[in-house]
Length: 147
Image (cartoon, rainbow, N blue to C red; front, side, top):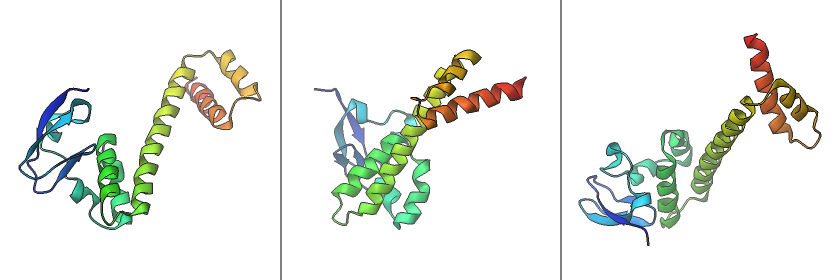
């Protein structure tokens, strides 16, 4: 069982950490891995305020939230009596988009360590996916521009 730590909700709305909801002014024990990591989050994330508004309005603000906050928003929306499937999809799309960007950046970092000859081999390999070749081509282009 993971370590539990107390989290106090100092906001006027219920906040969520995973499946744990904390009413205003209350303190609940939350699994350590779900608890706020930085002092700015110690007061709790106002998930109700974050989800307030139309799907379009909330979707525009999704890039401003951390992955943990997005997860809290998803859980809260899913548990809502008026659950909006389009909101769940928007939150999912945002998280998946970030994961894809992170994976692409990591892959690019790995390819940056390769020699020009190794990159050329990747480009000639018919089994390499086009999106990977796009990353490799961007590295080749960056190197050529730097010369």
